[in-house]
Length: 150
Image 1 (cartoon, rainbow, N blue to C red):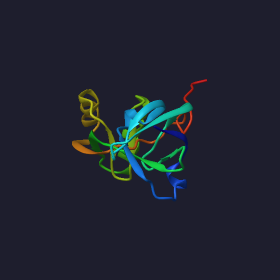
Image 2 (cartoon, helix red, strand yellow):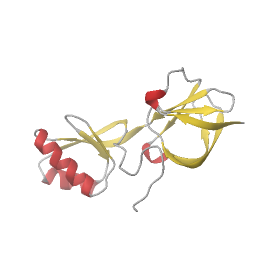
Image 3 (cartoon, helix red, strand yellow):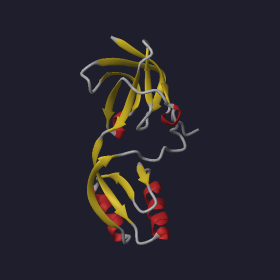
Image 4 (tube, rainbow, N blue to C red):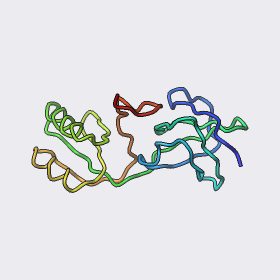
């Protein structure tokens, strides 16, 4: 079985991948795991510390091949603000609750949660259900390394 020896952030990956692993956001924070690739193969990921992988990051195998990490489609809420100021206010409320959020120019994507939906609609946002890949903004403590609040 091939093993992952290192990784390459998406913005630094230039070679074509030989395979792909598709993972939802919650399963992309990894240190040690047996990964099932889309071609049916398996590889062992065993890193010194946990890494939060993004869509497009590459896992480098011990034979030199690269496996691309792809964000799985997930059941999400699309939060549509009235305007830019409203988007900023909604993002603040979500951040205050430590919600993973994919923030774009005209919308915010978050995991489905009926309580949060009610809050956002009460704040004047339009909330609709979508299914698409989820790539939340990496938090201040989650780059490609560990997590800490010290």
